[in-house]
Image (cartoon, rainbow, N blue to C red; front, side, top):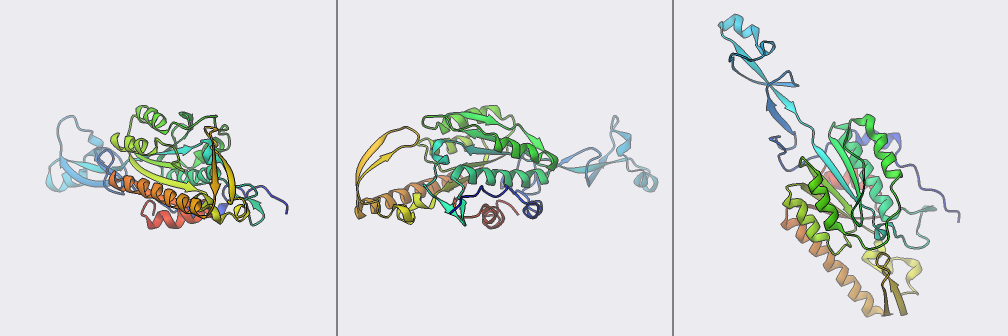
Length: 316
């Protein structure tokens, strides 16, 4: 069977759907009202809010002269100004994210690995934010913060998002250092906002790293992306025979090897261990008021963004 290149990142129909979505935030940022992200400021802003008495020094352009004509008193018009949300996307670019089962195909095409899947999700979230005039930044991390897009705003900047994602460097050798990367991120950000973390969270520092984001008052959503066979190795058809007998397992990041005896009991123990790992991750997120969602590379990212996130009220 011929393996074809993956389909383009987006088509025009999908972009049109993304444009209708709005990112939601459960937290008030800089006095913004929940979900609507508005703050009351005096000025010639977007939407009228209220009046107050004129005081010397006020801008005469803000005086409501119609009221003055009726009441012979000076009132200043107040406006409700919509503030943009700062959306940061932390993209795990480690070696574990770039792994894929050998021969993994989907409808004749090479199936996206976790990193490629995460890039599509990042692009989708970025487009949603830009379409709603939020400011968007994307960071790739592994041993540290490896690359940064820089904040962009407006749909006209979406090409920069795609170009950034296309040009991300190969993953550096060695294990990831999520906590150090997130510490650098938190120190670099002058304004708090909404942070999406796209990762498999296989880093031993994952839980304290997520806690660090909340400690720094970031509204955080953790999206765990895994291969179906990482949940249950028996789901990979080509592995069914290989899972028996003497096995040598290689850690893709550290290079460590482990010799094990493959049998039903080992497979059962693996499933239980993985399930416990995910349960601890989800419980930690719930305890720290971090949104959590697990997805797999088998789930089309359109379904994740347009359906699952909407159901979780992360977007509307």
